[in-house]
Image (cartoon, rainbow, N blue to C red; front, top):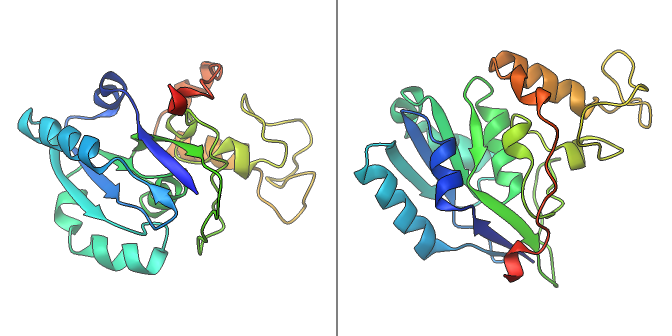
Length: 203
C-alpha cells in the first residue's frame, strides 16, 4: 500500500501557472488519498483564479481509461499552461507522457505503507521515496527511469541514448533532458537535487 500526501500550500501555489488545470486521482484500493485536503486546495485555487478547473477521477495510471476520460475535458486542457496532478508518482508520470508539451507537476508526495502494493498496467514505477523529484525532472522519475537511480544527471556510460546497464533501456536522464528542452526548462538542471525529508508522512 502507499499514501499520497499533499505538498505544502506554498509549494503547490508556487507550481501553479496562470492557467492551471488540476488533474486529481482519488486512487485505487491500495492508495490512501487525502480527499478532504485536496478538495479544500482545489476550491482555494478556483476561488483565487489560479486554476481553470479540477478534473477528478481514479486510475489515471490506466492509459486507456484516462485517454477517454480526458478527451471530455479537451477544451479546458488545451487552454492550460500547467497541469497540476494530485496522485501517486505513477499517475504524474502517466500524465506527463500524455501531455509532453505542457509542464506537468506533482501536487503530492508518495510514501510506502506495509501491505499489498497494487498493480499498474504501465511500465512506470514509483519508488514511494517521499518528497518527489518529478517537479525538477519534467515528470520523469530519475529514481526508477535510471538503472543507477542517479539524481544529479546521467553517468558517463550511456551511449546513443541507451543505458549501459541495459542496452534495450533508454537512458532516463537522456529522456529528462529532452523533455526539459522541449518545455524550455533546461535551467532546472543547474540546481542540484535537494536532500529530501523521508519521514514527512509520519510527522
